[in-house]
Length: 264
Ligand code: NAD
Image 1 (cartoon, protein in one colour):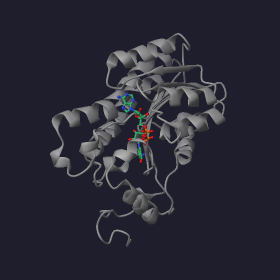
Image 2: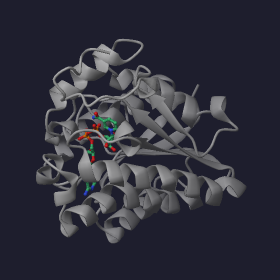
Image 3: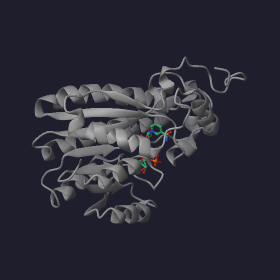
């Protein structure tokens, strides 16, 4: 499916990362991959994972710094003069913003969440443009908290709503160059990023109990749908947010923390 194709994976922290689920599927289907890591403690884990899929390129990329993002793509240019797809799974909000009420969000916390969880995708699409000479596909990762209130998701829900709007604006900008821009809205998955969200275990249970398919989402599920959105199978699809969540977004919402939450 991806033989002869190459692309960039941003946002792997470890082998439980959703971006890793995508990378693993793409590699198993023939793609060549380049990886970024967030500067700091994650480097050795990402290097080991990249080596396991024979990646020729692993380099630091800090979503909070234009210069770091630019340097990453510049360095990539000395390895590849073109690539076909780019996946960006970066997201961040201060832990204290993901408990309690949204109304108490600080200005600094708001800007930080927006910067990493929304703007970094726009910047990475801009930096990918020159590499996608014959068209390409860009993918970001969102969550249902962009559309509906979810307990404790708070400023991240607002950032994801902005990210989903960005996907549409970017799709319009990139369309004439045959670069498609889409997002996957994944159901809850136990990852490093999710560990910062209050009552996450309850949200996981609520989702598997109420989703029509009665399962929780796995990184393998997301990997397969990413394969669709990053390949020619979705050749005329852009600006789309695809839900990979066992169908739980179609269920009438209740507060999963309410006392009777498990009664559908
Ligand atoms: P994860 O912790 O494995 O991945 C988050 C990534 O963001 C990490 O690789 C981290 O290094 C990176 N990151 C954060 N700040 C950064 C910075 N300043 N510079 C560079 N990288 C930075 O967790 P995940 O759950 O796999 O998250 C991947 C994406 O999926 C995120 O956008 C997340 O919001 C989204 N998502 C997660 C879930 C879930 O339940 N886990 C559900 C839907 C969507």
